[in-house]
Length: 130
Image: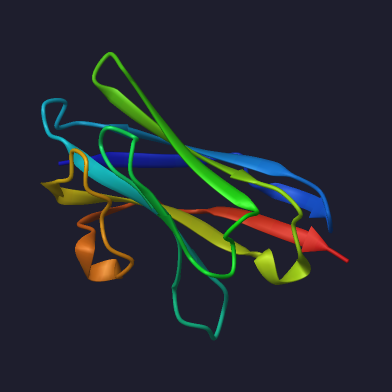
């Protein structure tokens, strides 16, 4: 079992920056991949970014490429994934969820589909004002 706790959401003006964090604990010896998704009411969940266990492989959704950066660190059996967001737009407003895979993804980045992930955090609200 993997437990995921997100933090760092808030209200930011358009053009600003924000960093989200997600701490994953449990399954210390598993090499799971991690990702960020976002969702707004009435819309489908949208893939934002994913990263391999090693941190060397990443992928991004088209709407955030060049503006968002996903990174990862590991310490004491915990894995933390970060999402650095810059040049924020009102359309980036959403609840951002962290996710982790059940399968191992050491140097391979997980997919962009929600079905690739077995564990989900509760989410953190990001609101961008115009």
